[in-house]
Length: 226
Ligand SMILES: Nc1ncnc2c1ncn2[C@@H]1O[C@H](COP(=O)(O)OP(=O)(O)OP(=O)(O)O)[C@@H](O)[C@H]1O
Ligand SMILES: [Mg+2]
Image 1 (cartoon, rainbow, N blue to C red):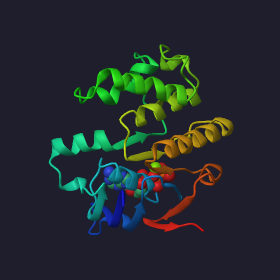
Image 2 (cartoon, helix red, strand yellow):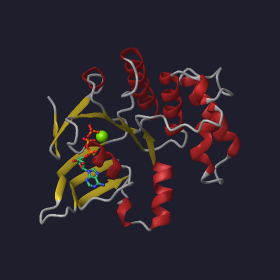
Image 3 (tube, helix red, strand yellow):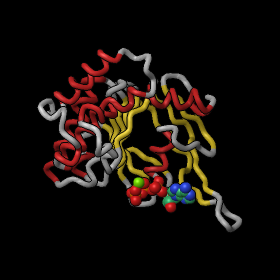
């Protein structure tokens, strides 16, 4: 199993005697080639779960393994390398660097580990930008792109190191319906081509409907939607 999530809980301390319990024993198993959408009300714990799966935050209890490794047993430096190599992120805001070109933005994750073959990586970045429909915009700056186009650059950037796990937190939240649908379809199409594990948090039932597996988070409990 590529991604295993077993009884993950997350609590935050409060000023009172009781902690704030945000995740209450989340279980999830996904293989490469599987994609899931997570819906659920605001404050139910969706982003908290994605942060933990992305190793940006630690669970209070429970276990996560990605490609057989529990990232939370790694030392700080190893964890950063693991995250960079295995996990891609797409957020609601594109987080592109305004002073860099589209191509440079896609190459940013590859700058961390220079042992990767620079020429091959750049060819792959160009290939991804072609596949997201921006092959003719490589030298443009983010400000010269539409919101949907910027989000497609963010998709290419998240994929440039061929992650096992691709996490997207409301990737279409800032887009109009047409662009949202297009970015959702693009994410799934690239996911099928790359055979990664894709998890998308979305408030849009239209986007969720594109996904073969759907879950709902309610007050820290994740359940499959039928
Ligand atoms: N660092 C933190 N410290 C304390 N509480 C936190 C922290 N981060 C999140 N929370 C709380 O955890 C709960 C879940 O937050 P989370 O961001 O996961 O919700 P969400 O499902 O992503 O909501 P939305 O749909 O609005 O994005 C909220 O009550 C939030 O206030
Ligand atoms: Mg959220």
